[in-house]
Length: 120
Ligand SMILES: C[C@H](O)[C@H](O)[C@H]1CNC2=NC(N)=NC(=O)C2=N1
Image 1 (cartoon, helix red, strand yellow):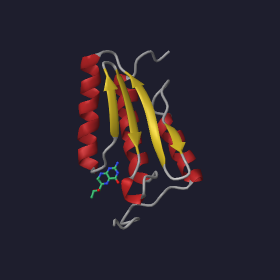
Image 2: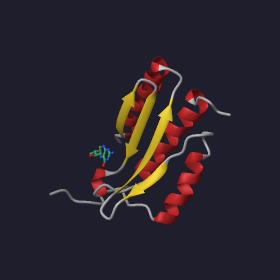
Image 3: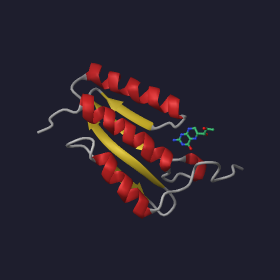
Image 4: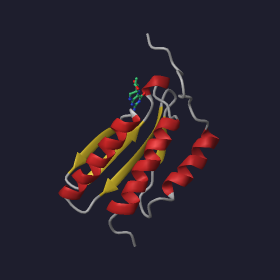
């Protein structure tokens, strides 16, 4: 059995989460992270569109590098120029923590500054 809530991992309150989401979502124009929750779990999700397959994998490699650095690993689904990312923290029983919002923030910053298509 795994002990929950180890160092630096606490489930975020809905209020804290709303504030963090607003900051995250200000970093791109047309694409937004959203909170999904059931009675027993919650996560952050986003759907990104990119210019082409090459751009998609440049972006994915940046996300992978970030995940490795932060030791926090998203669930990623990708097809050609589309990327779906889901973030949750297994260590607290699949809920959203600062590890998820921090990683989402960095991912969205990268997407908004270098990869976003159809900005207007
Ligand atoms: C020990 C190690 O840091 C933890 O198991 C990390 C690894 N990557 C992780 N990634 C995600 N998404 N959730 C976690 O709880 C998690 N835990």
